[in-house]
Length: 178
Length: 247
Image 1: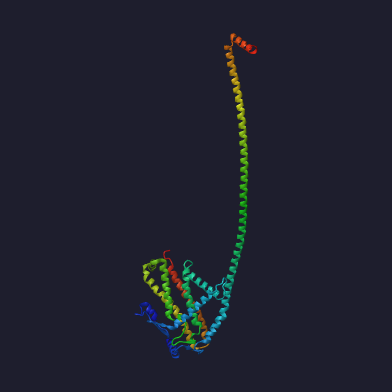
Image 2: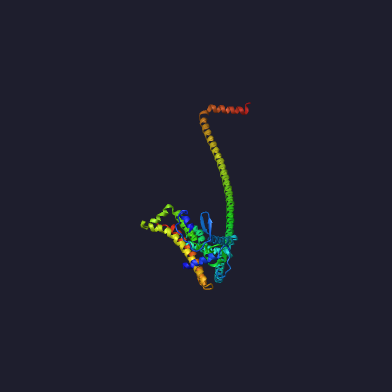
């Protein structure tokens, strides 16, 4: 083996002495190498192309599937957004309805309250005046009674015969004595 | 092996020497480098860069052509790394392990498929970069650095605790492992690729036509497997460094 190596090395160092081309077909093993490359390409290429095209189609398929999914998701998103908008519109509607209702209710309640207040006030005023009248009438009665009493008591003491006569005289004098 | 020597002791002391065949030597400063490896590495790197740029230049939602192919490759690498490192931390390591895998794979296949011998060099010959041990050692040392970095970054200095766990008796073996990992990585790759190319070369020398074909086809298979093995092991080592020993 080592002798062969030495022989090979010696053969080479004899032949070569600078850059150049060695066109000896046998020495360069050109035929065998060409054949080998040919065989490799012949058997390897279909396998490789097969594998690569499979890979390519698989990737394309996956991308397609993913894109479809994306599209679907977009559609769903749009749908859901539409729903959301609708729901928001409904919510706004409900809210505005509620505010108007509330306003209305407030107004009616206020009006009612005012009416009630008015009524109460009126009633109070009526009560007050009737009460006043009653009180005045009572007072009057009482004053009359008191004065009557006083008068009758005074009449007892003051009106004796003398005085009565004087009074009558006076009255007569007033009537015809001028 | 000069580069390895320089890496270890600044060229004052050569750790190991290993030479196979003739080389097209370049002198860069104090270093002597194997020019044919550089040329081929550049070609491989250029190929990968061009493929990546072409794949990402016009990105489509539904991938086609080279974008589809490169995405397929990336998916393969990502699965590989995830299987090794695990769901939680694999993401950070996809670029590193992916680069390792792609570089090794394209290198190996370029060595097995391209008639490099058409181009004559002053000495040596163009072949897969991975059939030179300097390349594989560089890749293996990068892997070592990577798993040390992974462990230290995650656990800090307590990363070194794993040397004495579960028992300090295993300390020598644990230390030895740090040396055997890059060694086995680099030698496995180098040996497989070089052996493959040598077998093909010898067969071609003996029977120029058709007979070497099955061996060449086998070589293609081996090359692919070796790239996979290297990437998988790199992932496994990084996972080992990241793993918690406490639970």
